Length: 351
Image (cartoon, rainbow, N blue to C red; front, top):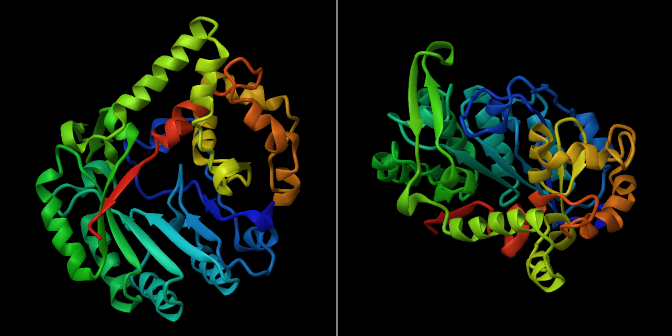
């Protein structure tokens, strides 16, 4: 229920200034619908109350939060209600004045706002993965925020690829000069897949393959491969209950075990970003399985958060669906959250 939540991920828009090659937005551009929800939507879902102890993360499977025009006012509102707000952004959008104002919100509310600048390279290379971002704009915006923000209110999160490894120390020193923490992120998708990037005017001029190898990989690649093999095995043959329970009991669900929800740009409520991401791919006929729960069953357009969380799928069926032979089973729950969330991103911070 709303009063029990500890973390809320808010995808306040599916709009974005970038075209990162590993992003579901880029990979499914033909299916993309651009939505944003408003300050009024947020206030309806989270009426004035004391949300101290709740972390609100502005993030996006499909968009970057800073593209939403209500982003600043949403931040002010949630902080005024006692919440802690975190952004995850490529930093390549909005004006100097906008970023200085965001910094002032931080300074006025020390410890209540933190920005993760997801900048994967420096002057020479950031645009190779963060396609369509401009280094001069990213640099300008980080400096504008640092100028007015409270100390320890920002971090620079860097995905190391083969093409940007040589700029790692330059970025680390730059982060230190801005007063930002610095961290290296490894993601499972970055470790499993290579992508073809199209760079240049209108994103069509130059093609470059992005790779991640060796020490830059996620540390649990082998564990996730074991889960892939497990999924293939139970789809091929009937497994005994002991083998199944060993895996399903290792699932750490963001909603069930950690009190977290994900609200997508279309105002649907999910237990995590992974299931929302799968709405584009519809792996394992997820949409058809969940359609059995009725129309708009998890929509917040005309329901409260508590009303959706009272639905049988959240109360009972979600946990039951982890069993491979349940009619509502979604293998993605095993892949992404079994073995104590082996699939999840890893961030190693300098401090």
